[in-house]
Length: 193
Length: 143
Image (spheres, rainbow over the protein chains, first blue to last red):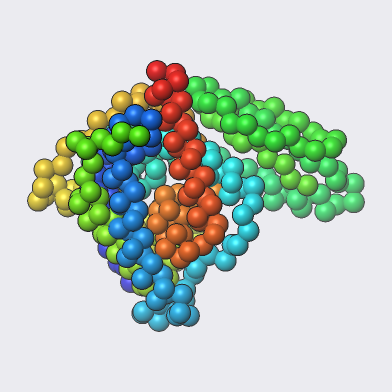
């Protein structure tokens, strides 16, 4: 049944993006262009969604199980860390370049838009790169637990083609610097110890 | 700031927003989860069996929505100016950024703010500011 509810939620979500005009990147860019002729529509979309969402989440917060008796899986993270900050800033750059965020891109893909297809493939590649880096980090962390492990941090730099530079912080102290060339993508430098 | 009254569509924006809010509320009350699209897609990279079904079902709903809508109302293809290089760069940045930032416009912007999560409020402010700055650079400094 999970899948049925999820399908309905996805469908209603997608209809909301279409009705609100947000599946059209030009409309999103009209909102993000404060210095041009500004289209405040996106603010009202969020306002309408949050007005309803607040009620839904207020009910959900008081419950330990869903309306159908299954467990709740609400996020537990509390800290505002570097990952949240840098990740959100990088997302904003990509969002501002074309006007697509993940939901509207999938809706436009459903319309058979070739450009949405290119965007979605690149987005999946970006998510895949994140997974690879996370797995490598997990392996490194395991290696660092070994007696001869380096207790220092690593700085990873990446060169991008046709993308704006994202400033990152340099790893402190003695570190290994790995320069990596990746096709068409830019990665934020991260440090971990 | 000059408001573009010709493009501003307050009523359809509000109506669409309410639908998005209903979808998010349905999802948390029935599936017990956040309707965050980057997270729903990203979870497919570490597939666990009962999860894959509802993740793909949510995505299918989003992808099928325009066909359902177009069965009743004319829906033009959006005009996108960006070319291949720009689309690829933007897609990669959105993919990586939303996964590191643990959310996008839906998960942080709609669901997170509805939950009054400080993390989501900070994330939303940051990606909005970053988006404003990017459009400013692209449209007013470079162009």
